Length: 608
Image 1 (cartoon, one colour):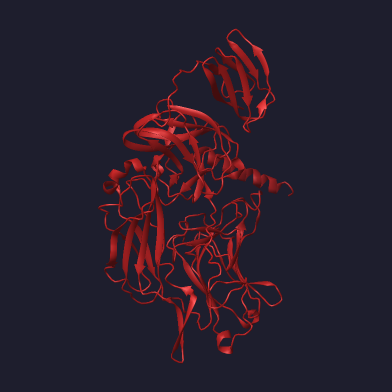
Image 2: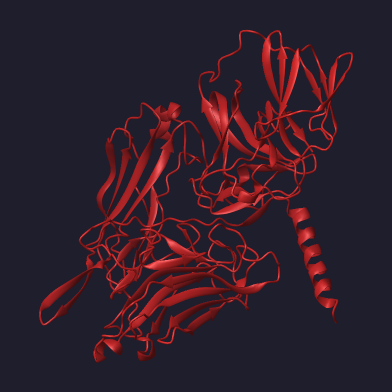
């Protein structure tokens, strides 16, 4: 009996190993985001205490409100939820705020992320208020993330007057849950919980070893004067970020701005009418050059036809832009879509007088603003990694295909490495004109530290590489671990991703989305050419395990580690140069400086 757990773990690991050996390019789970709501300091209505008041409403369209909530591992997304009530949702899974698993044990189960309200003073409610206090919210199982299993749960808990958390509602996962559907719940807050420090919280119970068993929350509302079945709102909302593409691209270089009007597509979004009656509405779409402030209206107070019906969700598109604001230099285009709905703040009428509650402003989700970079790069992604993806093969290669209609020079590459534990992992950044041939550029690099989960790392090529038509950018890895690369799910360009794990290139057919590897380009040569041709050196083998041969004419050699520290190695003279002994050195990238009569040259050496 004592050996059975080990046996099951072995079977599980063999299954995973078999699966990944065939899958090769694998989607690796969600990437956590922290989009905090801006707080107005010293405003007339600003909160100066860590307490909430009734009515309480948060649809997360403005981000994560730290004055209203305590976020413990919970993250934010505008794309993981499917058919959300409004733009912006909260994600609960098995990873902490940095995206790291709560446990390294595959089978560990337990409480994962928490979304906890700040306290409410409910001790002064009248009898009528006390009996009509309800909390409502929308939830979804999985969405675009991993579905929770039958044994996984989303739980709502209330804090009683003794400081104990009491579970008052829960839902389990399983195949009967629809990942495309949000459901709304209503839970009464009974008198036992109506004290001066009431709180409620959501917690997910499931696997703690990664971004698994995902639950999604949105549109939380707590107030008196409600009934169990009161589940509609005087609110119309946009439900997603604006979608704008230039053909397949989400970003193009400014040097191609003259062709933008012909390549730009319609701007797309979606609305949801949360009221249980029809409502006439209009929409407007504007494009603004953020450098100059020049704006071009694409739609202006365009009525929805037919009139939106009760609780209707509808996608819509702008007119095709016939022009965009003039672009003379690198900039961002601001896309603003807004609804004209007649939405107001929540109000109630007592004895003929209306009381408005500014903290429940139904207008905040009527506008969505999206920035489109027009700089020096092409991109398929929207700048936010929803997931990570990668391969688990030493010497394996990943590449993304791009296409231009005229010759361009590749200035550099940007890559979104999403796993902070992989800092200093060696890679070769690469450029191919054709995957059937050798790369036209290859250089060893280390994955560096970066600030922020959505920061992309820039690698300058430092040499003039010209490509035309279809070309490819990517990297080679030197580990059997998955190198985590950001994956955007909003623009599915999975057919542009290629991988090579066994000596043959294959087109991706499994992972949907856009891999966050971008080429930076220019029309003119970006780097000055040296007037003196380089001395010809032969340096091999590279990568090296022990001895490195250097052939050529040079006067001095210096070797530096990845931190820029000079290291002293055993040196042996030969007829053609020298041999450096790297035996006993740590694996990684080293820089070799050779000084000759024509000057100094640097070479990157990968030590296995």
